[in-house]
Each structure stands twice: as structure tokens, then as C-alpha cells.
Image 1 (cartoon, rainbow, N blue to C red):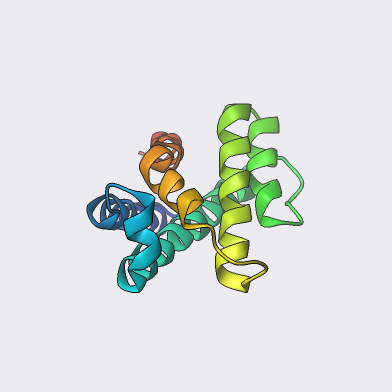
Image 2 (cartoon, rainbow, N blue to C red; image 1 turned 60 degrees about the vertical axis):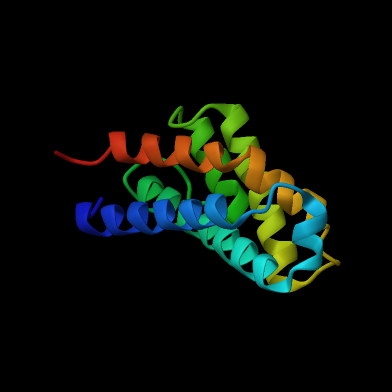
Length: 138
């Protein structure tokens, strides 16, 4: 793994999570009414997902595992290799599903779900970042 690249991605992830935490309103109704907050929260959540996938891909490149075919499979591969716990892999796969809806507009966004992710699941991204940081070459 290229330490500098990984550290830059981890810092970007930290900033994304910080922006979501700072800008997410206390209730989903407020988020549903405010397009600016929607943009800030959604953009930073989708960036966080993408950064985790990128970080996972870097890690997989150093492991003896088959490369994933999909973004979600990145986390399956890491769980299968014993790098992350299965429950974390499942949460991050759900985050990929959210990202796909947000980026590709597969369906209308449910702001209550986005609010729930922002309020209750930023720790999933932080936990993943800790795993990656612990594996950095010294």
C-alpha cells in the first residue's frame, strides 16, 4: 500500500464524516425540506462510501484474494479475508446501495433513511478507517 495515498484518502474520509456530522439537522423533516443540507449530507456520504471502496481496493491489492466485481463485494472480500468483521461488511454494503441510489437516481431518496445513516452509521465508516490505518506500513 502506498502510505501517502492511503493517508490522503483517510483524511478525505475524516473531512466527509465531519461535514455530515456538522450539517445533518436534528430531525429528518428538516433535511427533507432543505435542498442545501440535502446536497451537503448526500455528497459527503457518497464520497465517504467511495473512499471506503477505494481504500478497500488498495488493501485487497495487497492480499491474496480475488478482486471484487462490484463495489459491495469489496467489503465481502475483506470480511472473507478476516480483515473486517462480517457485520461491518454488511453495513458498508448497505452504504454502497445508498450511494448507488443517490448517484444514479435509481429511485427517489428517502430523507429519513439518509438522516438515519448520518445520525447512526458514521461510526461504520470510522471503524473501517481505523482498520485501514492499523494496516498502514510503518
